[in-house]
Image 1 (spheres, one colour):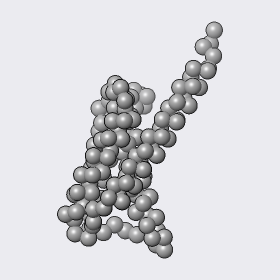
Image 2: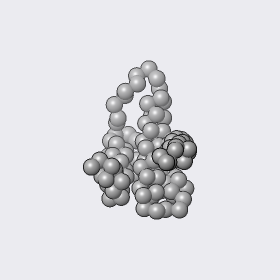
Image 3: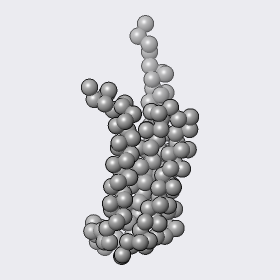
Amino acid sequence: MWNRLRGHIGLRWAMVAAWMAMIFFLSAQPHLPDLAPGLPGVEEIGGHLSAYGILAVLLWRALRGAGSRAPATWALLVTMVYGATDEFHQHFVPGRTATVEDLLVDLIGASLGLLLVSWWHLRRLRARLAAPTGQ
């Protein structure tokens, strides 16, 4: 049953929408809790890297499931546009700032996420091709 649900295209797009909503919600908060006191910048950079890396991977899965010819390229483009709109949104939130540096970290996170999922996908594909056919 899980395999059927996992491959359902509507579920993939719902996961993308839910993740985007979570990013939007967090961006609307004037202050986020300090989860790494004593390590300035680590939490903020890690948050951007992981949030946009996950978004890019979710978009890649949804686009791939929809039959996109270049899911990684489109996932990176959509992730960057969303990152830019998120920075614009933060400009209007008291206590938050919009910076080009954050957008660059978003790009790095999305790129790392896509590199990781591409490596994993190619590794699985090679293993499937190398496996005996059972004859």
